[in-house]
Length: 159
Image (tube, rainbow, N blue to C red; front, top):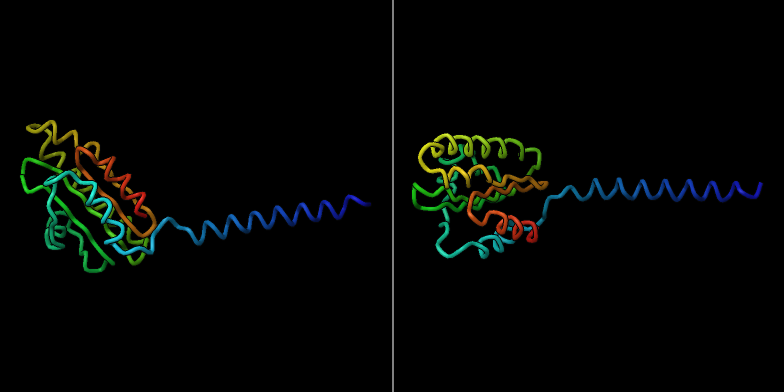
């Protein structure tokens, strides 16, 4: 009979642990409360000099076909040369449920670019094949560049 209190205590500890894990999963969806400037700043600093130049939301709309006016913030950089596919797009969303639509538009852009560069610019096509498109809660990151992994690491640290 003396073992019953220990069993009840163990069950309560396990239940508390499960409750804590569930609470963590619900409250930490992977998004960020930081502003788009706080998230993109370290990424922009990690860019090579003159690698890409800042573009407007109108340019981003033209490239991706997304209405960025409904987002909390957008940062778009692209190379000014038509022979360089380097791009960086970071979008902070008000609702993380909108992330899939943004990600799909980016994937469509990459596919279109691949079809365009496949036969005459193999180095640019290779960059497009290695494009990074990641969603983290309420933010979407896209980068096609020679140092895309370095820029992505700066983004992850900024979150």
